[in-house]
Image 1 (spheres, one colour):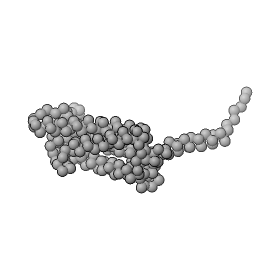
Image 2 (cartoon, one colour):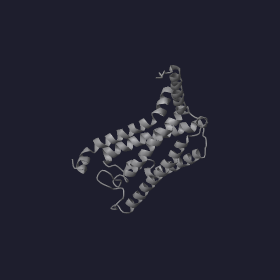
Image 3 (cartoon, rainbow, N blue to C red):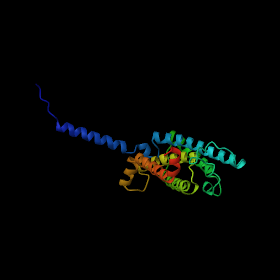
Image 4 (spheres, rainbow, N blue to C red):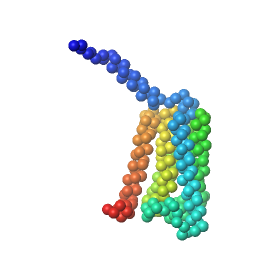
Length: 229
């Protein structure tokens, strides 16, 4: 019978290789360091922008229909909780110089689409551009939080197309922050940069959970009626 002997040195080498592989996955590529974006992020820009454009255009068309006929039946009015008709004409939906938020969103997602196409073509931008995008993302997070609060506390309705845009801002936002931090484009410490990059999907899930819990609490009575509880 042949005895098997473990090789401690071989195990140490394997652990070192796994550790190096892990480091390689978190280390930014030369393309990223030069201002480019990973392929997956570039595609997220494009796909997210297309979906966001569609949602924003649907909101613009819905508001036009509502202005032409205040009694119009909108496709986004689904039930007492999910609907856009009662919020489209409110001041919360016209923050910038009285323009519809959806119209502003159309322009913003158009810019996002352009950036995504540029990244897909292996384009590179300066560090300040990544920092500007990150600031825009933080502004987007603030707007989503504010409008979500307004929807739950004051408007008392959840606009389906609005929530689509919220989801895009959250998903794309944490990806941009994570990749910008990974490449060293953000003026943050190594620890925070590591968290922003490695935990970007966990942060995304956390943001969604917060919104879902807030909705469940805010509309608990209506949800109980709809679900027959």
